[in-house]
Image (cartoon, rainbow, N blue to C red; front, side):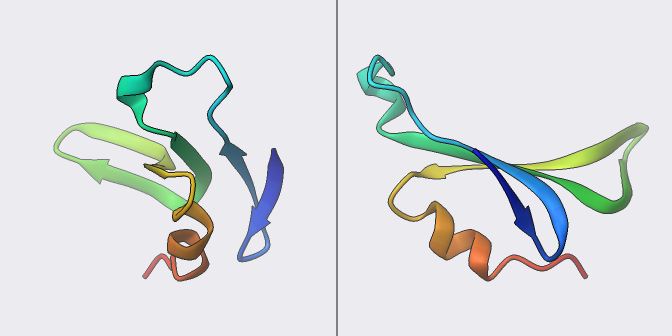
Length: 66
C-alpha cells in the first residue's frame, strides 16, 4: 500500500493470508531517509521497520528523523 510519511513517499506491506505462522502477522513500513545514512562503510537510502501489523501505524505516526 503506497502512502506518505511527513510528506515523503512511503510504503506499507501487510501480511498476506498465506504468511507463515512464524512471521506472527509481521508487516513492513518502508520510506526513504531524508539523506543517505552511512553505517560503517555501508550507505542506506531506505528506512525499513518490521512490526506487528496491529502496531505499525501507531509506531510510524511517532516516527521522525532527526
